[in-house]
Length: 199
Image 1 (cartoon, rainbow, N blue to C red):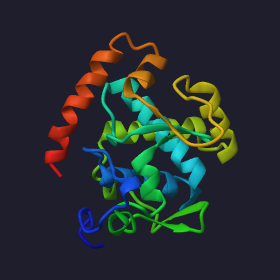
Image 2: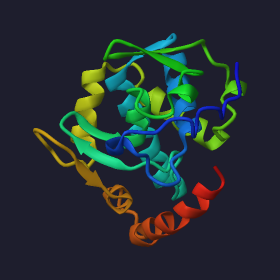
Image 3: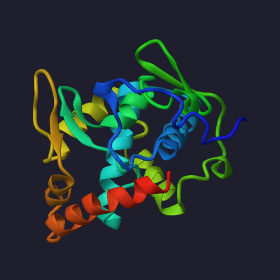
Image 4: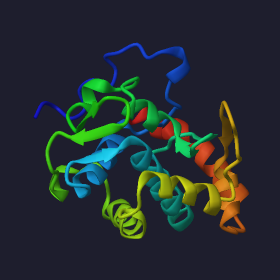
């Protein structure tokens, strides 16, 4: 496998798909590969992006920081991590993501192999444990059932027929009753620039 970090700056991204400062594409690619591997190497895109959102949501509410440093949006089919979805769709960091997964049509994602834990070294033990928890809770569900779950159990989600609407970190934290949601969200925003300088 080629250098995992290759391709991070090799492509001019479409203006509508520019990732937010601090976004972690390697972690996003490895998290996609993690869930695809648990699903015998292939997984529906809708199911994958919902599992990733629920993982990020759970981790944020547990550890007061994100895994992917992504942006959240409400879409007609539920809440999503925006840059991660753009990676899945091949709009961002494709040289990097192709080391972990490939798309088959518009609906399915295939891992390039079944990844053992040691090959997903960008993800911490706490991040993997959170993803495993979400898989135990939702991995057996169909894509449509996870979609419905996200509509019904994520209070920060705003129902839409078309378009998209931002979901703030404060809204995600407040939805779970975190009394420090405003302070944590402000810390995340201020820390983005420091994270971005490392990559």
